[in-house]
Every structure is written in structure tokens, then in C-alpha cells.
Length: 253
Ligand code: 5GP
Image (cartoon, rainbow, N blue to C red; front, side, top):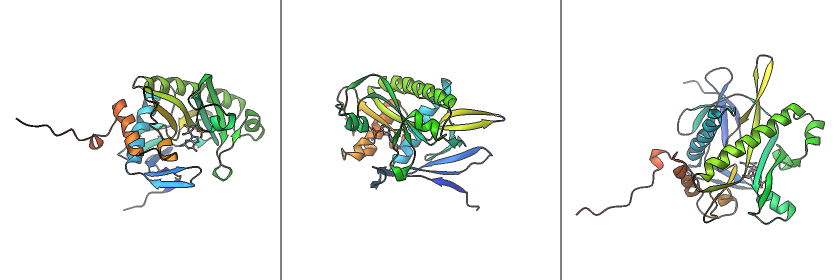
């Protein structure tokens, strides 16, 4: 059997050459990392859940006309995606203060922000993905002004969509990170939402209890990560059949 070609291996995913030109197979691992991989573990089932959840969010975005790299899910851990050139920026959108924003500016976690705040970080693990401004992005040629206008518009559309979807199942979208890719079509390039959208890259809090249902459970040792992600998947109705909780035993009279 021929071995397929590995294009790239990251902390949580592997990219393989796809079956047709311009496609890749994106494989979701169970590895969990935080604090620039200083904290590491293997979380059974995380890859399966993130594959499903990313499929759900990316399909929803495609359906409302927000272009993404997602083509279709292939199996429990893999999806077929369009190959794209990743812009070396992490685009973060925040609705409530949390994480590095709270630390940096001394704003209490959970404080509602007056409007969504969009931040850019330069994707470089060695540097710890530092926060950068549009001045840096333009000066170092990571993206053009037209790209930045398109990225801002995409980020805010993703925010509106995800906020609504999560609110409908009793979850507050505190913040999230997306990555943007360039897809070339003849002489033209189009920007698409790439990578993944999952509880690994979002902060999700239960509206009633404030319970964290995202990777902060792992980062801050708050409990079982798979349980948290399974709860998100269950509420969205995308839990794989095999992961359905066992029904309680019932007495047969
Ligand atoms: P913060 O800047 O507060 O650490 O993160 C803001 C949001 O972006 C959080 O939802 C966090 O999960 C996400 N995020 C930031 N950097 C990364 C990253 O390198 N990987 C992933 N998966 N998510 C990130």
C-alpha cells in the first residue's frame, strides 16, 4: 500500500496530500497543548470531537456565504479541505474580556466589551505568537490593505454566526481565534476561513452557570476536557453516535 505524503504536522493536526490537486486531508489528533506546548497531554476522543465540531461550524459558514477551506468530512478524524496559503496571522475576536486581554489590560474576565475587539497575532511559535498591529502587518508584507479589509469583514461575520449558534444552545461566545488562507483561482485570489473552529480555539461559557466548555478546562486544570467538548457537541446535536452517553438503566416491571 502506498504511504500518503505528510505535508505538515502541527500541535493538534496533521495535513496530508489530498486525493485531487488543490486538496488536503486534515487529520485531527488527540494531542492537547497549551502555553506554547509547555503543557502537553493526550486527551482521548478530542480529535474526533473537534473534527465533528469544525465540520459543523465550517459547513454553517459555507451555507451563509462565508467562504471556508472545508469541503467535506471523510471519517471520524479526517476532513477534506482546500489547500491554501495560510496568512501568518492569528485573528482573534473578543466579545467579553478573558485570557490574554484580561492579563494585559487588567480587565476582569467576563466583562462585556463595548463592541467586538479584533486583534492580530503573528503566527510564530518561537516568538509565542506576539500581538501585532496593522502597521507591522503592512510593513512586513504579511497582508495587503485589501486583505486586511477582507479579514476584518470575515472575522466579524464569523463572530456574528458563531455567537448566534452558541447563544441558541445556552453558550456564550467569549472569544475565538481563526486563521485565514489564500486560495488562488486563475489570476484571482480569495480569502477563506481555514484551519479549524472548535472548542480548542474558542472560549465558550455556559450562559447560566459560567462553566467553561473549552480548552481553558485543560489550560487551567478545571476537569475533563472530553466531557466539556462532548457537552458542546451534544447541545449542537453533532455528537457522534458512538459517543452518546449511555442511557440510565431503567427498571422493567
Ligand atoms: P488569548 O489571547 O486570550 O490567549 O486567546 C484568545 C482566543 O484565541 C481564545 O479563544 C484562544 O483559545 C484562542 N487562541 C489564541 N491563540 C491560540 C492558539 O495558538 N491556538 C489555539 N487553538 N487557539 C488560540
